[in-house]
Image 1 (tube, helix red, strand yellow):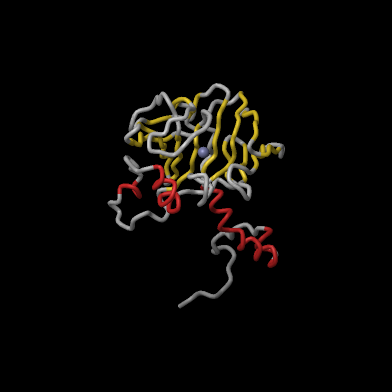
Image 2 (cartoon, protein in one colour):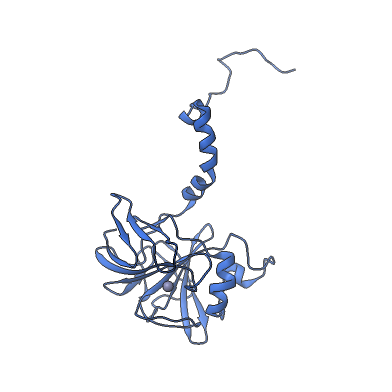
Length: 237
Ligand SMILES: [Zn+2]
């Protein structure tokens, strides 16, 4: 039978009461924001995709194709022109008829992409650390698209979200984007696997998209200093 006698000496320790649990109204508000908080907790601690201690230009936040869809892209052109891994992971070369571009898988399904690079320095399957040189900003168009002015088109993806195809064997859902045209990648694939950079922090800067393409803001988390994009800011790491 169930022992209903209250005996503090054998009860399991209670969890400390939180402020939220102690106040009904606050608790209700906490429930509303819980999913966003959970997502933020899982987002990796990224740097920016270039070395600290320099200025970078950014053409702003935009969708992968620059026209519509989830705004999962930020363009950067750091002073030294060198693109570096913002976090450890496994680099992949995505091959197209006119050359290669690079993605990095960082674990838990998080992937970043680096388009328009020239003089690529990593090999397919290479383990990279934060700061490993990936290549140089450029105007390369291995799978299509366009570029005016050397930069890296930095993109955010998740391979653990809704797949393009429900079949587990689908190479695109599994992250092999060899031969996928930029038109398809920035359309169908970005719709399924692209993750908005809005509200995400890279290198201590929080990026927020604007209503239009190639806009938004970069805000230094440490002091709230904000730059309107397109614009320039200094990355201190
Ligand atoms: Zn771009």
